[in-house]
Image (cartoon, rainbow, N blue to C red; front, side, top):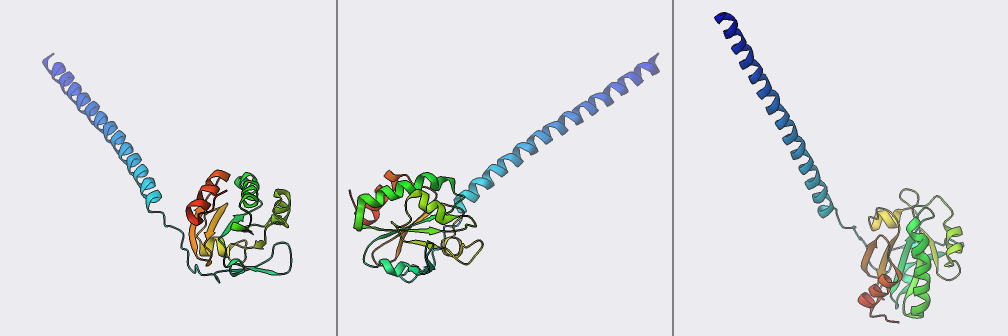
Length: 202
């Protein structure tokens, strides 16, 4: 009877030890998952903070010279020397451009000759000209076609480090870049930028 009782106590202790080991293993797993999650969140935050700014490269008036989107000529930033210029980069696949470009057109008509606007079709295998016509900028703005790089993205990704579309580049009257906007702008935000960078008001 005593021998059986001793065995039961040993079995009970073994079970307690095993239960404790399993509980500690579960705690370690939960802790490790929590640590891994926290590290993941921290790394994502660090990546956002440390994501490199676009490399602007040559920001002089001769920075680019591109073929026309709707003709056989060429369009260069130097063509607009003497007046601030807004270069609106767009693509046929860009959903944000559907709203942004018509709003930019309305602003360009408000500011008239105080600011030049030029459209640049980039990273695009589609019908950029068709979209430009639908948005109403064909025949109103000079339109250029980005070249080089992947899918014609030499200027947008090569010079400005674009990670998508749309993108807007603001040039002063000397053709020097004063701001690169990654992502969309509303008409009001664009007007605010024109006032901030060039003192243009309507």
